[in-house]
Image (cartoon, rainbow, N blue to C red; front, top):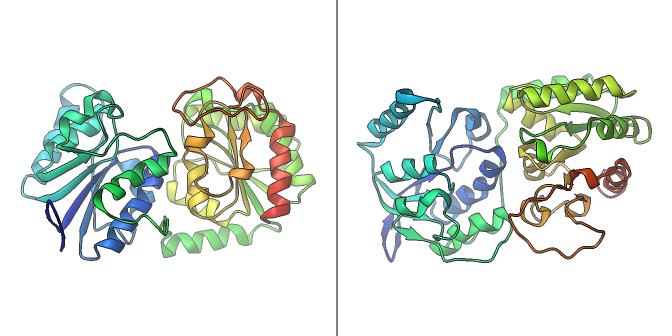
Amino acid sequence: MTTQANGPIGSVCIVMLSAIGDAVHVLPVANALKRAWPDVRISWIIQPTLRALVEGHAAIDELIVFERRRGGLRSWTNFADLGHYVRGKHFDLALALQVYLKAGIVVGMLPAKRKLGFDTARARDANWIFTNERIPPQPPQHVQAQYFEFLHYLGVDPEPVEWDIPIADQDREAQASFFSELDKPACSVVVATTKPRKNWTAEGYARILEEIESTHGLQPILVGGPSKLEREMADEILSLTKAHPIDAIGDDLRRLVYLLDGSALTVSPDTGPLHISRALETPVVGIYGCTNPKRSGPYRRYYDLVVDGYAEFPGEEYPISMDQRNGMKRVTAEMVLEKVDLAVRNYL
């Protein structure tokens, strides 16, 4: 058990319910806590869609799955079920890493002595109401560094930054089987996000698939989630391209992880698979135009592969911010292919 000025810490509960990219950013936090406090027990409250990403992680002792259902009484039943489950527990520390109302309510329900969250300026949806300690205000910075503020507050060193996304033995077997069928290295291409403003064009993807295949000798694989938007984008790309990509769109997050892990290169807009690729050390060409790549780009590596449509003109020195822009329309196939060429030269 670790002793701090505020008392001993033997148990920590992380609240991060959803968003693949954010969950990836939490993993180095959990690893750092475990390195600093080897005997600490770490629980993580998470929604079912992310369970496959985190389950089996060496730093996580317990996953508490919070079922998300919409509408009326059933929604409150979820909170009642969670409240019943945690009633007999005790956490020395809760980390409120997610700032929206549902996550705040979960934090408020936890039997934790210390509930550490963001400062009032950053705690959206009045999340500061549910915490009793807050990290100091900081200027905007990368999301990963923002989560490390919690570690600095606790006197924990985040270095080395380690994600350690788990891949189970059966998934390694499936991965080996999948890639054994290919006669050339793979390039995973993330076709879309669930947020239309972040998405590029089907025509652009169709062209870069052809260049990835013919010029660079890579096998393109279309990857992504099960949303209607992603499926429709993949179908449109397939109808436009002369390339022969493998269609691996689906709802199996563990499969997505091992596909990204086995690929030589990923091409992706700002969405969860981009951050998974970074964590797995798979070079990733990031296509940005909506979100600020200085805040949400690949952390510390592969930033040279960012396609920057966020900049309103080449070389714009914009600050780190949460502001969104309508810049995906500025991204051309030539811009993406320039970064693919760079990735092939420098990383493959």
